[in-house]
Image 1 (cartoon, rainbow, N blue to C red):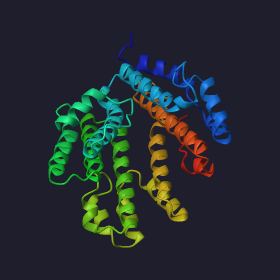
Image 2 (tube, rainbow, N blue to C red; image 1 turned 60 degrees about the vertical axis):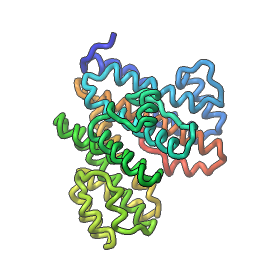
Image 3 (tube, rainbow, N blue to C red; image 1 turned 45 degrees about the horizontal axis):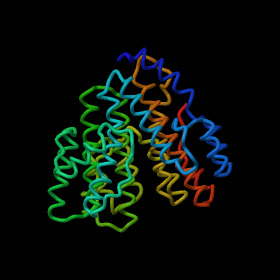
Image 4 (cartoon, one colour; image 1 turned 45 degrees about the vertical axis):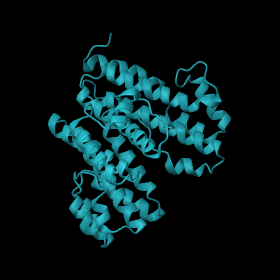
Length: 329
């Protein structure tokens, strides 16, 4: 049986990391054909599904996500920290379930790897009661349900669910006094609020609309973003100067301005967040190897899904290089 200690966890993680796809493997998968990519997955026994066929790639990916989450929950000596990362999957599933309820649909894309079962989340959504969720997320979902009684607008679902998740993570970061956790989730909030700011402005939305969709303030203050909404780019640069991730944010903004694509800022966000763990991946007796393994598997799954989607749909391979994130290690 696994023992709840960092020594045991880090030793197990070190062994499990050997099965991760490295940069060269992902590059070969991206450069080859669809058949080549599928063959590489099969040879690697990706997902540990002996009966898998070329039609089962989503099942393979979700199998890996589920196994990874189970590993993290078994090995983590500090569930309060690692559960913050697993909970994000539950939030995505909550969004899908509530939107399906609003649309009267039973067709829900389910993601494996969260803290709650499909039955648990399904019951919460069906009854509009979220007592099992952490307080900040529960409160946000209760506010959402009150709003939906007035107006059943599907776009509200992501706004409230994301707000509750980020608020919970920031609250927990303050409680556990772990600097890395605070830096990670503060940077996540900052990047996501700047991305929302830019998307809303590109849509021509009013400044008042921005107030309704921002996440909790971390380093970048929401008031500063609202004040900068109708002003120059220099004002935005000043607003992000208080972020723990200000250099990465500015670099992402520069790439976005050069290419005209907000996806460049999203890529900068994801690469920065992974770097916070990657730089410390060899520090045993800490949370870093455990979180790092989880993020590595998550990044790997997204890379596999991106490559297969592009190749299945006959899209330009340039999309892969544009959207592919840095890998762990």
